Length: 318
Image (cartoon, rainbow, N blue to C red; front, side):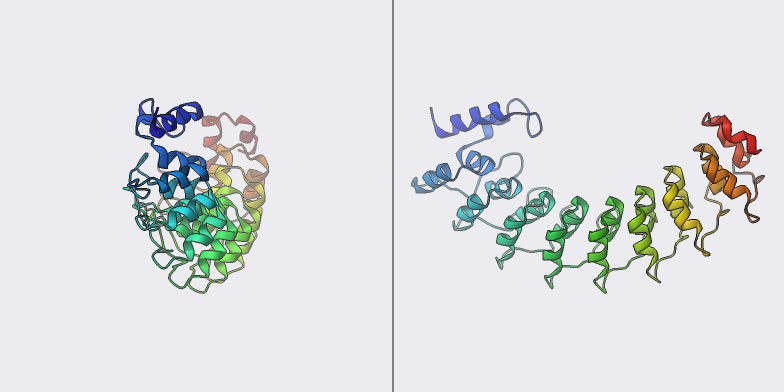
């Protein structure tokens, strides 16, 4: 039985249906096995074999180095990088490089190893516009974010295909440390909208992260009442998900209108009623600027949204 057959059998034993289909192990050879599982001895033996090329061949669109970086096998990464036929910046068909995988998975030592190489582009985006920094921010890996921000070539404000910046992703995760780290860079726009018009504050409000909301509101450039492309403000995003703490913070800002209409003609009171948020409904009805009889585009008043969502208790305020 050859090493490639043995590798295929190992993969079958490991199969948890996350990576491959039934026939995939037939394409899983020795170098993939060593890189995937981090078996240094196997890789070293293969390199000693005359004519065995360690840098070529793909398993599920990725070369051996990418799998080693992805699975946090430092020693295997070092061995592969010492081979002349290994490209440390090789991207798969989706544009993902070993560095982007390591950043996404939070493998700091692998990131450190790769960043030492001149050939590695620390700011290379994949086909979705996700750079290594974006991957690290999306996954909440603060140490890697700091490491990448230390590189001059890295754009800390680069948007992905959806228009979200690393800050926007960090805010959407509710990662206070990441948000503060990114805001420490002058180039970072704390109020940059994505393609749907949502700002970092909107994403943080929709996540219910009070700490991130407070941090962003501490920046003069941030508009606390900025509507997205649907006319939904951060306040509405928080209300829809029932995040009372964030709602209270935003309502405490003078710039925030509690009666602004979205593109469907709906007000904050309408969303509060739909969500059965009795306390907020009572608070809003005590505000002079709130019109309890405002008709939306469907001709419904705010409190009429309560029965549609079966929150009949709200109707006592009508």
